[in-house]
Amino acid sequence: MTELVHEAIGRQLTDLGVRTVFGVVGSGNFHFTDAMVRGGARFVAARHEGGAATMADAYARMSDEVAVLSLHQGCGYTNALTGITEAAKSRTPLLVLTAEATDPTSNFALDQAAIAVGIGAVALRVRSARTALDDVARAFAICRHQRRTVVLNVPIDVQDAVLEAQAPAREYRKVAEPRPDDDEIAAFARLLEGAERPVFVVGRGGRSPGSRDAVRELAAEAGALLATSAVSRGMFNGDDWNIDVSGGFSSPLTAELVSGADLLVGFGCALNMWTMRHGRLIAPDATVVQVDIEPGAIGVHRDVDLGLWGGVAGTARATAAWLRANSPGGRTGYRTPEVAERIRSGLRWNQVPFEDASGDGRVDPRGLSVALNDILPTERIVSVDSGNFLGYPSMYLDVPDEYGFCFTQAFQSVGLGLATAIGAALAQPDRLPVAGCGDGGFLMGLSELETVVRLGLPMLIVVYNDAMYGAEVHHFGAGTSGLDTVTFPDTDIAALARGHGCDALTIRRPEDTHAVKEWLSAGPVRPLVLDAKIASDGGSWWLQEAFGH
Image (cartoon, rainbow, N blue to C red; front, side):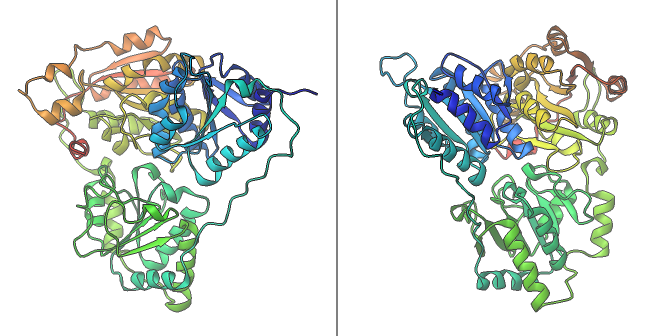
């Protein structure tokens, strides 16, 4: 039976386990998209390729699956580049399957591979009808096993060719993760032996299988407190020694405990400016250890006293075994009764008192977020956009685990929040999806509100509306010339939402959120958009750190 390359590509990907495909279909990607659907994959049609890319990124992060982004050649590909860049910077296992024009006179012709390399993705191509299945298998394996974003270009003339007889595609197996040698494990263990206040900070690299339990086991042996970077928020929920997120979103107590560490260990964590507040969370005399599967990542953002090239789970298990064999009995370390009581009674932002600034028809974003946190079910998945408002949903809305918080912020692009929430919702369908957006980002991504409605997602979308690009306004300050370029008339976002088929409320006081209870109790079948007219916070400290970077 004759099979065309585009049909074989779709069959191959679904055979490899692809379940969900995002995209906007044009002539160049029509056939291989249809082949994946006929193979059993679900296709999620976005309204813009940029939204599709971010949906696919979020889905892959929250499902631990390889997601596929299907794109038309040329303009379809370039429309998606911001979302692809975010995925590449975050090492999301995302396969970008894009048609490619090979005729240099085509309006769609451009060097798509060079663009992919320039944004940090892996660039590959389906080279011929003879190599097609192997090219696809290789691209998929890099996504799955190396957690990379791969742009696989499919030339138009190749995808319409007849598949040639060939040997079956090679099976690309995952190679064993590196593990530090025995001397390095012993050196790490001796540092833990001598530490009085060790803190472990687990980042994106610590979300690999088995890592959470292995790090907890080692922390118990060493007497260490457990923190995460923002992208792994919620990983240690339920552990008495969890101190939540290290970095710009740290509560005052978290910041105090991290900066009080005499030994700081980053597990799959870059220890960058965000996670360490430009290094201010690292005491001058603290010893710093970094464990990473990528040797080139060690010491990039700061000097370390010990760098260990290895997987998080394997390194943690080996070190715990060394301590049990050579230094039995465990250590108290940072796990004292006094610290335990402080964590229990004052760690969370919701336990930190503040003076509510609601008034004159505007709601304090902290009071709004606290009120919503009390109303929403525990099983939720929170996704956030970028902007001055960002900390409020990130700090005040609790999440059940690391699959309850989707943080597409590696590129710091405004406008990804709504699409992020769609991808996350599809990956975790048993949880209430919550999107936190600023007015600027919400309006940038507004086309995907129709996608939320069309998919029937009972999503709560909270728009922190200050009628400005607040980060710039607060950074440059009142009275600065040019602020009219980043301020706008008030937008009736609730009316826009109703026009798209959503339920909508305008929020001016914390008590206005009571209507959310009614929406939840009725068993929501449509999204609810909150147009929250927020009071000024004078500028968030987490974004003040960003300017000039």
